[in-house]
Length: 383
Image (cartoon, rainbow, N blue to C red; front, side, top):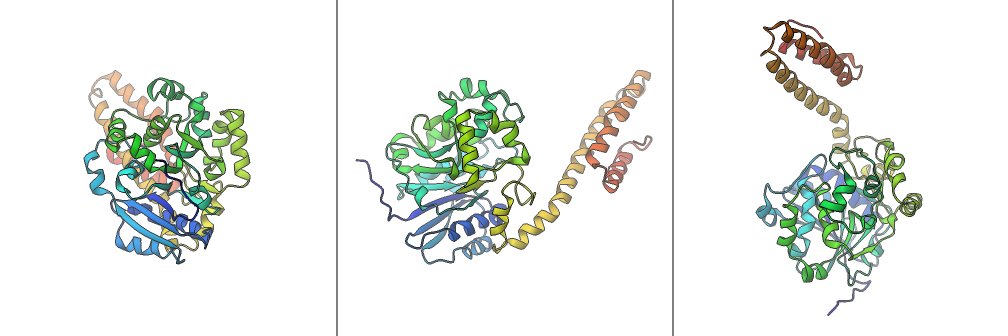
């Protein structure tokens, strides 16, 4: 028998995180608590495999109201059968798959709201949780970003040939109904009646899904999605190009919905590789920093932001060193021949020298370090 949800129920909200992401999740918690309704109760459930007690304690500092509780749910054991069998790439991490476990690991819950950790709430989420999902697997917002790429935009090496992929590989029958998985109201009763968690994970392991579990959720939920106002999942204008190059290419209706939602977003979603804690000038960054300043992790967020360019450059330098060495090793096979010497000279002068200029970005200190590394590998020439 269908179960009717009432508006006096506890608002159960689920998040997935690793320990490193705790500082950014804390800003989302602060925003949820700030907009919570004192007449409702809220349950925050953190899915993680490695969240430590210290960081959990700091997250609990966000829960300053009697009507809001927080608990950690260790999913390491539940994820063990799928160890090493799930695709990840770029900024997509293993934690994104945790939500596929929800029907199994929350057997006493009939319904939950799932939110990605890279979000900020600007509205009470209780009305979102109260969405009537009877007869549906999920409620979610349509995705103008993916549908813009579907309409012919090739911008991401991780998502080539999007139209062919969605039509013929993922087999999405109504591509413009594809939803963004950052905000989802799960009807867990309906999931348990319709799908088995092992079945879903077997499908997850069966292909190279471009958008990982978001694609998987869209595959299984076709025709069983209640669509939400896009204000509940407003993706920020990543690097100033998402609207211009991608969302503008979606359907006129979805573009209008997105632009309207931007004017009064209920939830801002920093979807993409660049986050406001990387670039404080990014779109909607003021929303993030408003809550970062009251987070017990504020100093950690600032420290990481300051040191991130140094860490990125160190990693780039290490990768460049390995690349130079591999090229040099390969060319040594030919250097005893005159043609080989010409080839080696061409590679170093026409490939490596411009690369140095690009990597250094005009920074003399970085350029010096790269040149020093180059001389160690190939001391007889100077780029």
